[in-house]
Length: 205
Length: 261
Image 1 (cartoon, rainbow over the protein chains, first blue to last red):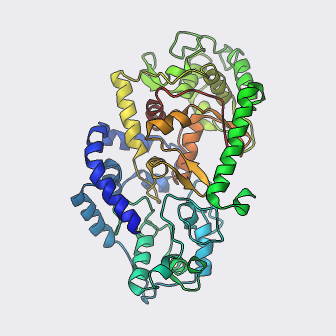
Image 2: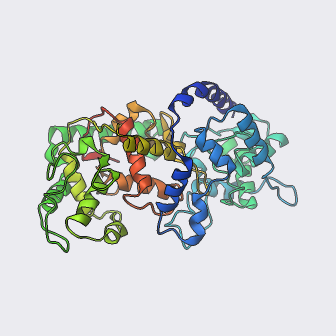
C-alpha cells in the first residue's frame, strides 16, 4: 500500500508537466456520443455502462493522475459512498473469499444469463497466497498483508473500504469500486476482507 | 503445467521463451506459420467474384490506388475522401465489400469474428493477406490530415476513458511497463517502444485459440473483458483506437501474421 501511495505521489508530481502537453485535444462530447453508437447490440439495461460518473470522468480526462484538489474531491465523494454491514462486522469467511479471489466470472456479455455469482478476480492483479503462483502484478502483493499489520481493526476497516470503493483512499486507482458499483455484495466483500486479514487465512500463513 | 511447477515470473519467462523460439523457427521457415493458410485463403478471396454484384475486390482502393495491395497496410489507417472517413484496413475492406460487391453493411457487421478454434472469417482472412503484403515494412501511416489527427486524438481519449461496472479503460492494463494479468504479460501501449513491438504483430495467429485474430477482433475482445457490450467492427471507437495505437507504433516493423500465445 505504501509503495503504491509513493508511486501515486510520484506519478502526480511527474505527470502534471508531461500530460499537459500530451493530453489529446479530443472533444469529450464527441467521444461520449461515439461510445454510445459503437455498441449497437447493447441491451437497453446495458446503456448505463456507456456513461461515466463525475469520478470516472475526472480520472479519464486526467489520465488517472488528477491534480491535488480534484483528487481530494474524488476521495471525499467516494468515501461517502461506502456502505457498511448492518451489524458492523467486517470479517466473513476467508475460504469463500479465496474462491471469490480466484473467480473472474461475471458481467461480461457472455456471462448472461448468470450461471454463478460474480467473482472478485483478485489474483488477476494481486499476489495473495504462496500456493497460487498464477497472479498478476497490476496491484501490489498482498502476501502477509494482515500479519504485517498485526491484524489491526483499523487496517481491517481500511481493507473493507479499499475493496468497497478503492477510490476513497486512492483517487483514480485502477481497482474497480466493487461495492459502490454493485459488482460484489457486502457479504462477499466481508469474505474478501477475511481472506486478507484473518490470521487463519493462507494469505497470512 | 509450467505455472504449477515454477515461480510465476520464471513460468512467464519460460512460456515467452518457448513462444520466442517458435517465432524464431517461423523466421527461419516462414512457410510453417499457420496464419499463412488464412493469408493464402484471403488472397484467393480477394481475387474471387463475390456478393450480389459478383465482382472481385481487385478494384478496391486501399489508399495506394485501385487494386494496390503491396505496402498498403503500412500506410493505414488514413482518411479516404470517397468515404469521408478515416479507416483502418478492416473498415476499408468492409467499405469495398459494400460498395463494390454490394454486400450489405448489416451483413458485414453481424458476426464478423470466429468462435474459439474456428478459422478467421473471410474478411479477416483478406485482412491477413493484405497485411502480410506489408510484412517487413515499417508503420508509416502519416496521420497528419486534420481528420486523421482528430481521430488519433479521439483514440487517445478513448484509451483512457473509464466506464462500465469495473471502471476499466484500455489504460487500466496497458499504461505501464512490465505488468501482468495472472501470468499474461501486458504491453505498455501508450509507450512508443512497446507499441512498436506489439502492434505490428496483428493480425496474429494465436496459439491458445488456434486461429488468426485481427486487430479489430483484438480490440473487441478487450471491451468484452472490460464488461462492455459488443463493440461493432468498423465503429468510430475501434477505428480511433487503432489509429492511436498505430500512431504510437510509428516506425515499428510489421511482422504479420504474428504469433501470440
